[in-house]
Length: 466
Image (cartoon, rainbow, N blue to C red; front, side):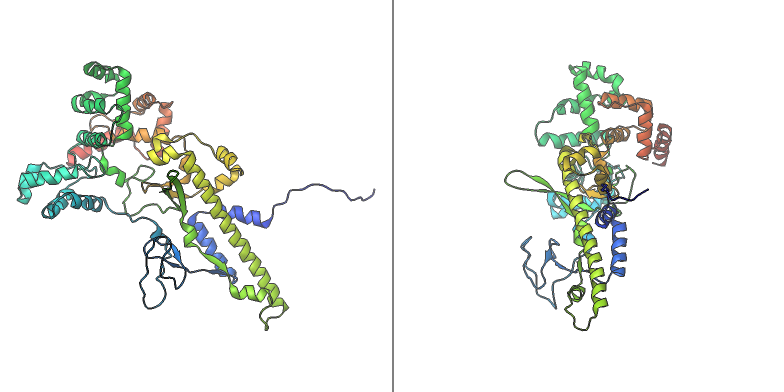
């Protein structure tokens, strides 16, 4: 037996890589807790409290009176600029549907009708429908039918389109009228004819499309496309968009999910491009302590050798943590921007246009490991252009288009006939989704939508209550 040296390659993981991977996968709440822990345990790490512009929220140097981001000139006060470090300052304010409608109506109506318009808005139900006629409203409030008619007509012109209709059919027709003012839309005329003249046949589903085609003198494929347009792009209950979260369940509008990043369009001469703003990058502003930096350099005369070594240790730990934070923000922004570009149609046009995409495909495009994408996406939320807040993982969810159309089909059910999962599967297949009844059941349960029997009972109960 004898000993001899030899070389053998080994893979080692540095503490920096371990910490960076750990920090990347944390949610915003967990990151805040981790930062608080680091601040408590490491005296060489401290918060940097910058001053912010009161108009746009961008950082402004202390003593500076002009924001270079928006041009806002700060007023002089008793001391430096006011602070604005809370994350809510970066999120567009959430307003109620009543406030949203009132702001639009005040621009369309004379001041004398503003109070009446507020009264009309107050009568809207949870679907956005107006249950009372203009005559009933005029009689109850002692005003003329013409004045109420002007307020209701103005309500039909505002967004969300279809608000103030008497029922789902009128809401869909109002939305078609809005679209017709924006230019030529395929199958718009046929869709309007189906809603006006063939509403009963339309509600019965695909088995009646041939009857509609014969009555309108078109082929069945044209009817299929027009019906698909109605289901995909119109909303029979216009107020629901203000009350549904990503799962389709009702939530109060003042309790939204908190986004980790904002998606917005940045105009440029070469064409508009999508950009991402990381909220936590402005919320968590940390730095190394100047005192510990000076102590580690030996610049403090009263410090002995052990103090310098301790300062070195804490300072290196702080720099390691700050580097991991910056790497997290770089990766999150890189992944979010890549997702927005790959899924540009989804971002601009909605869930119906989501493209198939895997984490491995995005990782190959960015030149990183698939696990990096998984960590970056986990428990992160992004605010879309329409202010919806969705999980970043939705960009990889190939079931979203089918779920979107499934929700649309169920929203258009009448109070008598609730569609079974088998019928829903057939309808979705007609819209181009390769889907089975069992998959429909799984998607419906994931969206928190009850079975057809329970939906039918709930509709009957609502009818009795009304």
